[in-house]
Structure formats: C-alpha cells, structure tokens
Amino acid sequence: RNGRNLVSYFCNESDTQQRVVAAQLLMLSALQDALQRNEFFVEYQPICDLQNDKVVGLEALIRWRKADGSIVPPDQFIPVAEQSRLIVYIGRWVIEQVCRDLPRLQAAGLPDIQVHVNMAAPEFLDDDLPRELMAIVEAAGVDPARICLELTEGVIMRRIEKTLPIMQELVRLGFEISLDDFGMGYSSLSLLKTLPISSIKIDRVFLQGVPHNRNDCAIVRTIIDLGLNMQLRIIAEGVESAAQLGFLRQFDCTQVQGYLSGRPMELHSLLAQHGELSANLTVRPCPPARHT
Ligand code: C2E
Ligand code: MG
Ligand code: MG
Ligand code: MG
Image (tube, rainbow, N blue to C red; front, top):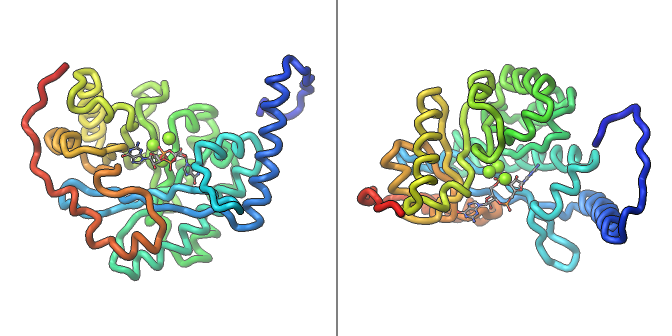
C-alpha cells in the first residue's frame, strides 16, 4: 500500500496486531477461493426518479454466500480485498456480472435502465481500467452509457493527478461517473467543478437526521442546491421514510435510493416485481418539519 521501491520492516508490536494481520491473510485466501468457486453474487437496489416516480437506475451491491450458506456483507470483506490486487479481480467480476444481467433487465421492460457499480481505489489507479472495462462491455454488447461508476471522494482524492485522467477517459468512452457518499470526505467544493461527474449521492448519514434535525436538513438542502446549480443529478441514499421523501421532494432532489422504494434484491426477485417497485413513492409532500 505504501508503493513500490521501498523496504519496510515488520515488527510484532503486539499480539493483537499479529492476530489482525493473520486474520486478514486468512480472509484474503478465503476471498480468492470464493472467487474461484463463484460464491459472490450481486443484489440490485432501485434508484427512483422523483419527476415521474419511475425506477431509472439500480445499484449493484456485491455479497458473498459462503459454503455454509451464510451471507457476508461487503463492508466485511471489500476493505480487506482492497489491501491486495484481489479487489481488481473482484471488481472485474462485478462488472462482468452486471453486463450479463443488463440485457435481461432491458428485455424485461427496463430498456433505459442504468446500473451503478462501485469502484475501489486500487481499481481506479489502474491505467488499464478504461481499456479493460471497454473490452468487457463490448464483449457483452452493452452500451457504456448504461453503466455508471460510483467513486467516493476518498478514491478520487488519494491520487487526483492519476484518477482525473482515468475519469476523463472513461467519460470519453461513454461511461458515467457518480460521486458516492458525498459529504463524508474532505474534498474541497472547488474540486466538484473539475470532475467529469454526472451525479452526486448524498450519504445516508445526513438523511438520518431528516426532517427533525436542523443541521442535517441544512446540509441536505445545500447539497441539493449545489448539485442542481451545477447541472448534476442528486441521488439521496438511505431514504427510509415518507417524511424524508417529502422533504427531498420539497427541495427538488432528483432521485432517491433506500428501503422506502426498495431493498437490494437479486435479479430474479427484481424481475418478478419491478412493476411494483415505485409504489411506495406516491406519497404527498409532508408539511414543513418543526426543527429540533
Ligand atoms: P454504498 O455504495 O454507499 O452502498 C449503499 C449501502 O447502503 C448498501 O449497503 C445498501 O444496502 C445500503 N442501504 C441502501 N438503502 C438503505 C436504507 O434505506 N437504509 C440503510 N440503513 N441502508 C441502506 P451494502 O450493500 O452493505 O454495501 C456497503 C458498501 O460496500 C457500499 O456502500 C460500497 O461502498 C461497498 N460495496 C458494495 N458493493 C461493492 C462492489 O461491488 N465493489 C466495491 N468496491 N464496493 C462495494
Ligand atoms: Mg455506492
Ligand atoms: Mg453510498
Ligand atoms: Mg459507502
């Protein structure tokens, strides 16, 4: 992680540290096996447009089904995979899976659906990324415009001089880019105007305080305003209640994603019920909230 061309000494600072390293190595080799045994799968969570209450996008979220049937969420293995090149192979697997699923979604009456795919930093520092992604979508006959790559501020800022040209190349090839977990990083606002992004996703921690917490409401409104003024789409994440939805409608948020409009689900369940996916969205804006 510290780069090449240097020597580092490992010292057993403590038992705990040693155990952490050992556990990570075990996890890495288990992940390698999981990839080989095809134990990963993707769930899709709907992203709904507030203009017409239709599902316009899906976020692809990876899960790991272990041999014993238990399911491991990404937060428990992606950070470990990110410590090695394995994340690149896992990331490629996700894109390939999405490209296998996209034609089925389109055939099932969602011709313009866009699938959002999360990308980790090591994937995004790889100069081969644009060429490889293009090869994958071309082989599957998928239009790159149907794929939106989600990056966090952390990923972009880590090596902005490297990530920016890669982002520009991807956009030139027709992919879209979304800034994920917005507000959680520490990038300057001026960075926004230099990035070739088409949407920002408001992190769900800010939605948690809507509509009762004055500060969270102010932050969410400000991000929506900023995004709209920059001609970006704004996607609110973690929308669970009608009150949150009412607030977002009132301030012209573009799109929402959360348990209210749909949980992440496997392709077959999604195809079975996509007609009903936006039913929960047809609620009226609620009266302005009283702030605490
Ligand atoms: P994220 O990209 O911010 O994804 C949104 C997370 O919020 C997902 O958790 C989703 O299930 C959860 N979520 C959505 N709506 C709600 C809601 O209304 N309430 C609550 N409490 N949670 C909601 P998940 O699937 O556990 O993924 C966690 C993180 O793991 C993702 O955060 C993303 O950073 C990472 N991740 C997931 N799939 C991939 C992948 O294929 N590649 C990479 N590199 N990272 C991934
Ligand atoms: Mg995401
Ligand atoms: Mg997010
Ligand atoms: Mg996240």
